Length: 625
Image 1 (tube, one colour):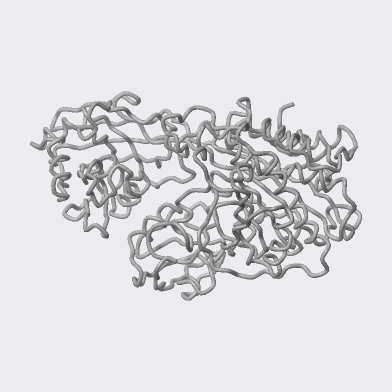
Image 2 (cartoon, rainbow, N blue to C red):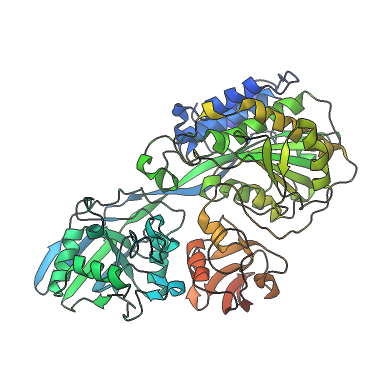
């Protein structure tokens, strides 16, 4: 049955599940390893094509989860549907108005899209013409005393930059050799060009340093992003650009060789008789996706789910990478199914297993809201949407339990994050986990990280995050169902069930405690941790936690860490950052790049929107902990 978004005169397949038959409790009273593996195997099958956000296969997974909730006897919160619909920007397609042409004196040449040039999937749209400036690799790395923009003015110009970075094959390079530093990222190059005033970016392969490699154009869609740099961004073939260098009396391979030789920039403005005219027409695709949730009321729930009092949340994200795209850690296999068995069919199967288990148990004081989130791999989009549009009052949620990658437990050891976010949580874990011979690493007490529990932490809900660790199959096509250790996962689920039962029944609910984060774990984008408050990332500490459901322009803070530079400057959760050190901030990538360029001890002036009004503050940056 085709899935429709609920609207007047139509209802979704999730509603149809509810109306088809009264719910029946089919649980056996056992937490079954085989049933758990069956769920993982279905969600991570080749036919699910990696459950990419916005794909039909993700909706197929959503329907399956809703069916299992119904069979377990869970209630839809609104009495009608197990789904919460929201829209996401998932990809782009090319419009009909993309063009690139250049003139050298009286000679005019129109280039062929797809053969001579191509826009990037995340390019901004615009119509630009003017002079060109070559800006080397497009890198400003003050920590290495290297700046391709040092001796050129690109304001209101079209800037041409090389792929990768200097001395990439030199083991002694300050740019980390073959590993590539963050400066090689396309969004770093885009943000840097924009901050220097460029109106458009042309990107060309540094083919002369890659012996035997073809000068290929990136396939449209191979490099995707939920955000646009805000200006046109196109790739041009080397053979076209070499004509421009020749017109300037220069050799492109010679320039690249010289930069690599001594790390002295070779940027220059092309002659004024060389001009470029371009237009980009990249159209963002918006898709409707669904969080799926079912409610098991407690004895305090009243007559229906809508009158629920206190409850526990058990959640996991059910999306993955689809066919990989640029998020794959096996880039040579992008375009093939990335099944996501551990990430995160394992956690989703855990939610289903516990839903079946608790549906057969006597009711406790508090209810349980079981949730499966879409859009986590694009930046915690589903959980972020839910906490900003909750269907049950968040102040009645006593705790949120998140399971992300629980299927590959090694040596009986499990990472548990967030134990410090609620009073008594750490003591509870220390009582329960040894009963199941599970070694617990609960050193990360804070509730911030790169998975869905972070969305609840920002709303001051105590959280626990269960995670079995990264492995060599993470974000690769080799993350398959047959590698899941069902017996170990079920042992953990017994422990999670005990923790949940105590949270349901104890008269005293955990009190939220704000804790400084350390090392985030999970599967969200690196840009998130880069501008966040702690753990991994580049640059000094600022102290904000980004809201991944970004506003049209700027970066909304989901929270600001107590005692952080941002907090000391008076910034608050809900503020929208629009300017950093005189630079316009349009998205999280802009913020990440601008912050990375600073040092601990620098004081920067920022502008935020608070209640739609601009507010300025001075933030003294500090060392990242």
